[in-house]
Length: 117
Image 1: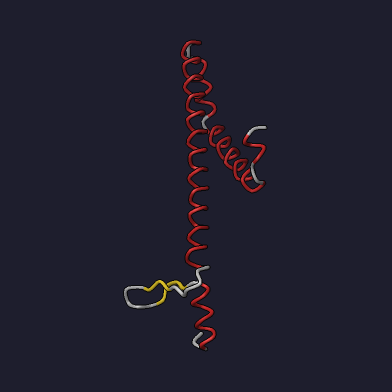
Image 2: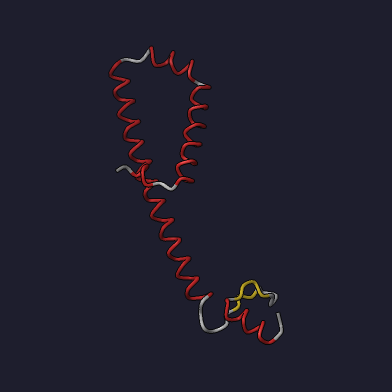
């Protein structure tokens, strides 16, 4: 099973949309591209095909690296949520002017209980 088969529907739709945009851009330059292809030698075409395949592999590797980074970011976010928002003590993040920028759930419950909310 390829990685494309494992994608959520919204990601598959996004990739299809990107493919359609790329196809449209390619069609805009198709006439000049075909003329250039006709003038290339078989060796030049083989070299170009090799470069395209290597570039495709590089892009797939970069994509996988980005997916891992995104997964790590989600894990860090979840950890922050657990440590800050679900902490048993009330925490607030203040601006330099002393305004509350963020408060965790415990702080919000405390203010609500005090009638300060």
